[in-house]
Image 1: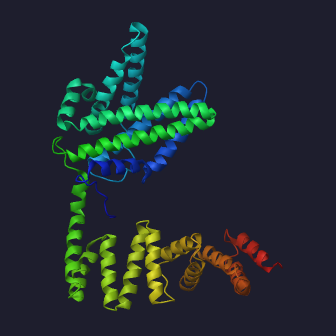
Image 2: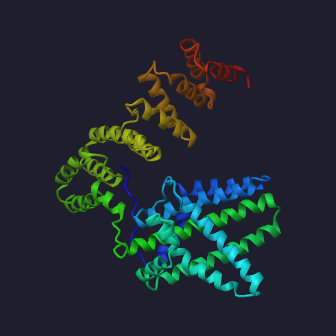
Image 3: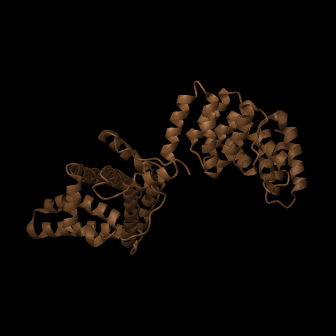
Length: 414
């Protein structure tokens, strides 16, 4: 399992606010914001537009509440998805009711609407936190619940009230500025981008503050429990012990790491410490063996860029090194080609063709190799020979036409 990024409750408030500002741009939160923003275009549809707008906001709040829960559990990264629930619709209904109530107060009394605005700024954090942690709409709307939440927070609750007011001001100013400067087709996504960003920032900050005071809420942060179960803290203790032992007894330090690497998926720092000790002891063969194993694990964990770095280390030891697994070799060849590392990509393609000549992906990597060879005039002959072999060996493959097209391109005079 990949290392879990945990929220550090000991960070100063200024650092926590900076981290919270970056939160909506990390992990799954960024594509979620983009999706919610673009979805608001559906609100432009006639008749059903207003209902779709409510559905989109409800979905946004469902994810925001999941962010709150996730942060309260100590996770520093946003959640990949949100469990369905009534919390999103409840928040939409509460906000709509506050707007209606504000309008009624203005119409009937000609003033005093600020009281409703103040009440919402004070109560909304408590309502959102109660919905996220308890899931009961009735409990969240109970004023006694608000008082209970506020008492558990104390003075820091004033920070949340201030954030509510600041967000309302920023979003309001953004709406006016965008609508006055751009046509609706442009101002709409810009406004909702700001609004969605502010929403996730706000809910994450609430979760962080709950995490700091989880004992007052009777919570046991799940991220920390999981980190203990996967020995994440134990890994740090192990690395500290290895670092202390390595200067005088590198072989003993290496022996300490071996059992951990055999147990289950070890984090990158453990692998890196192991490789550093192997280099220090000059055990190049062991470095290559470990590289094969770790690259395959990294590809399975979708960390292909880190696997590519391991590959480059191995190639510096053995210039002819290639992964011993077709999936690893193929994915790294594709990645190297995308990153413009043509020489490395060509080496991997050649290795693929040599080691797995009957694999169904041979035409793909053969064609990729031919394209890389075709970038250099002095290698056109080799590329044409390779393309002829592919066309002959795989006449019914879906890439047969592409192979022929590439051959014509290389064979035609410049």
